[in-house]
Image 1 (cartoon, rainbow, N blue to C red):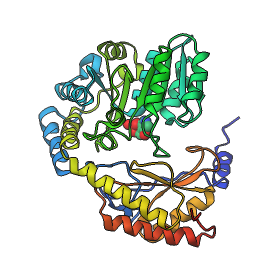
Image 2 (image 1 turned 120 degrees about the vertical axis):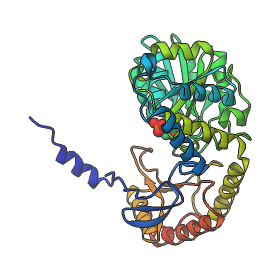
Image 3 (image 1 turned 90 degrees about the horizontal axis):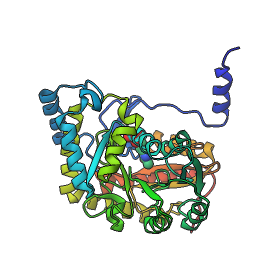
Length: 392
Ligand SMILES: *Cc1c(COP(=O)(O)O)cnc(C)c1O
């Protein structure tokens, strides 16, 4: 017997689900070179334009000179160095939580937290549109795992009635494929009423939401009692890499003891933590980045409405345009590319069947003129692919 990979790959191609990796041949930013072609990109998560910022690069360089390039060991052995510790303290201060813990990636942070908190006999309840890393974590935990209707506190309440053991309610802050916000006040109310804990993964909210970039909890003004477990990632608005969990002293100490993806991995390079310390400083102090980003978001939505595109309920930098059919989503994405623009088509299984979309992401590094170019090209390409977009 052998694995019939050729057949699996062929089937995937036939369903228009085949994935390819574009080769980025420039630093991240609005103007990139991909597969030899200069493009104006609207698909990265570098929401504040910090991934290629001179001061962040310099902080990384200086960090490498001072601390070397490798973490060298896991945190519990001898890999927990001064820059990691300083970054954790800065992130605790930023989030207004007693402590924060650094992870190497957001995927690992989510696996680590859910599996450390919940196990057999416990219950994990998740929004059905949560990020894949959260859903994977729920399955891996061995707890009773149930998904409630998207952003629906009543649906959550029903499942909470039947929950056994310790109960963890888990939601994205900003939903990564739709751009909408979790109704955290309502979810927190339901969770607290049943002594469940609410865990929020705010990968896309930190840096973009809240007056100081404090994310969805700042946006709604929610504290530790409402959101005992707060996860952020550093590869998006922070422009670097890694992730953190913020919460109580007991939560962080428990993760250090029990979170296997924290324990059994090498710490991130200390120089990377130095770079993130700088990007955190820029994120907190340079309010103009968020303000400009919000201007672009309003410009895009207004323009898209005028040309009759089907937008989603989002005021975040994630602005998907619903297309429906995977084949058409790919065609539009290819046509945009022929015109020098890069917008990713997102297809199942990343999103539910029949909801393929173009996922536009905006960044403070974009200009108004670039957003207008995008709108013009979308207008042309969506009309050329036959189906008229809905005129609302
Ligand atoms: C990107 C993302 C992650 C994964 O974070 P990485 O650091 O890229 O592994 C987790 N959750 C959400 C909601 C994300 O968007």
